[in-house]
Image 1 (cartoon, rainbow, N blue to C red):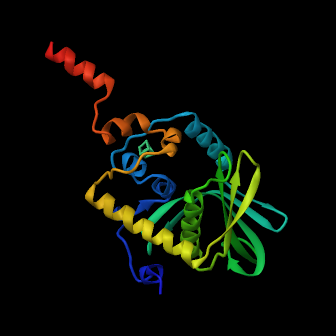
Image 2 (image 1 turned 180 degrees about the vertical axis):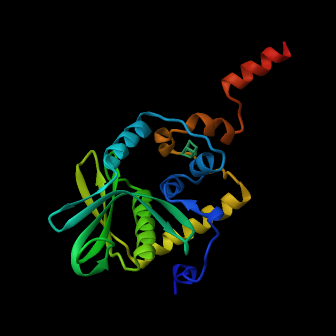
Length: 228
Ligand code: SF4
């Protein structure tokens, strides 16, 4: 039995809910996640601006429309009381299927498929996959169904990558949420190994001086002026 299965018997209070969007930051770097979600620090660089613009495009319209046998819903809020997480799905497609679920105000039955929009191309790490899986877990709880797969759409390749929500992946999401919750409870920002990935991090300026235990140039100059 996976810890994921045991979690099914847990329930969280609303104030303890984590944000879905944090999963990709956490998977990329625990320290980055803590700086954003615990210390509330955020700096935009070109990459984050690109990503934000792309998300705004994906969210443009914020409504449902039906194309053929598919209902496309944008910016759908999702929540899981069992896993204590909430957030927004970029896009959820509902495909007409006799084995699917009933939707309020719609005829027929539909299978939900989450689609997350990302800038760039598929990555070496699994941050995007974990975030998508967490969305599926929320949708399953809300719609009382099972979701086998979803898609990641990458702006640079303009392609969809299929993601299967296998038990190992679900378990990884669960363990990650537990780790996030524990750090959040302790308000702890961990130290981590720096590496090449730091070059793509929008928080280098606030993270690295602290992490290395050195002072920023501005704080050094400020203290020198105060001493003088
Ligand atoms: S600079 Fe590196 S260690 Fe610091 S938050 Fe960013 S990715 Fe993590």
